[in-house]
Length: 401
Image (cartoon, rainbow, N blue to C red):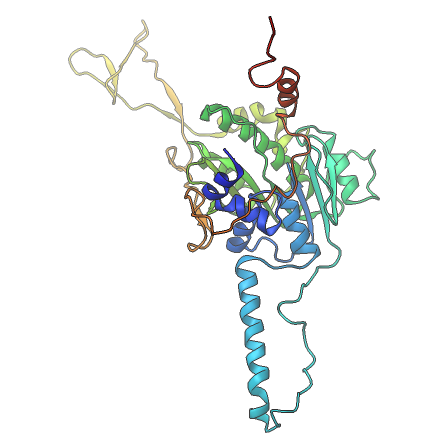
């Protein structure tokens, strides 16, 4: 597929190049921010699986440079227009001649001016190399490896003691993002499982650096166990929502889990040695919990003629030789709601007037196809291209007889 045909088929791919974004995924983060106001009161951010750096680029332009996009930019434009209208009609109201320019009243800067934030700290982590971005500290590391946590803590706080056994940040962050996903195979069950393990690693790392009240956003693959994931995250966050940005293709099973207001359980200590505070103690904890649950016997009835005991479902219970009936026991919750389940709220993000990521659009007359803003630095297919070129092309070298 050529560049022009992809520009026509994928509007966000074309807009990303026109607006200077490294990848179309930048629109996903912007649309999530429009819905959940992710960047409010945020100055310290960790971006996991950041390559090629589109989400870090959004963070750099919003937090460091103070730019606004989407709905916020539209509101700023409306505010600027109102200020201009007030300046036009102000002389008539005050009786001052319209030919005399009134001095601007002191106050906050104009709405269209950038408003950079102070003391911004952004760390981007990925296994792939990331081209430099203004104000972004990049780390080439594996988020699933325990050694990444001390490296991240040292980056966030240079005074952090690397020899310390604690894995808690002395200066925690406000927001942790993860747009990582494995190389999909097309087998949805396998892809969902691998993605869940990547999400598990990102969550464990986020628990080590998030401050109370912080936010966590990560990509997920929607499957039948999304409600279980929702219930697990509700243990750590006050609000959990599964969101689907409009720039994410409807044909894709990807979505984003948005977790707001981090509130760890009392006594919880994050550690990659004991993920989610459980680690290898999970089996013992489950056994201890089952021992504390009430034991409820299966309801059984005896046949008046044969004297054989049966359960309510009709299965026969085998009596012992001494006439004692052996009953099967089952675990039950204290409130009897063993079939209860969490329903994860699902929310679509993005303005309805925005482009449809699954639609094709007619290119304007005179459209010029642009090159990507940042070509891949180390794509997985780079080795395959080199091998194909060494072989003389797709069909190999021509042999002369």
